[in-house]
Amino acid sequence: MPQQQLPLFPDQPKPPVLEQVSAGGVVYRISAAGLEVALISAGKPARWQLPKGILDPGETPEVTALREVREEAGIAAELIKHIQTIEYWYVGNKGKQRVRFQKFVHLFLLRYKSGDVQNHDHEVNEARWVLLPEAKKMLSFKSERQALEKAEQLIREL
Image (cartoon, rainbow, N blue to C red; front, side, top):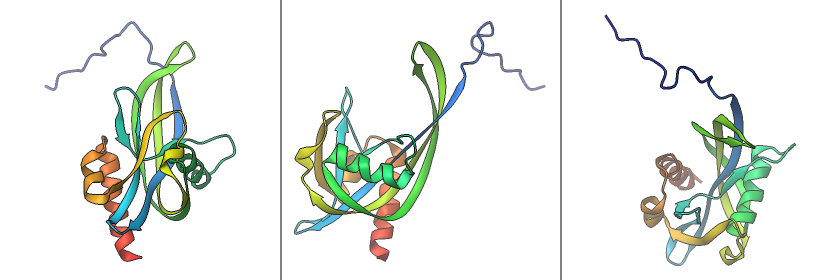
């Protein structure tokens, strides 16, 4: 007979669920050194990740991806193609209330147009161009490494 799983805190109600949607992407350029992508270091402790952020009211994921790349990495890019949407859950606070977030992150392949990664915003510790093989090693999240692999394939098909 299978064991019944008991809730960890049976006397406490489950926190409410909120949906959260972000967008960003893999920004690439071809330099003399090879294929490079823009990565950002954010948080404490610092984590290397793709530039991305939460949709503002009325924004589409595509518009948000371009805005977040401009803000977090300091560069302008053009949208090439949707790579994937990542979904995960986490618990956090909204105001003074504990909430379960169902998070969706839309990631796009973006081609560098202009700008300098030194012009990133205050939320970012550092932004830099990284050769693709090194970027795969630096990214902190498995889902973003997988998106980078898909982006590499899409770039080869262009």
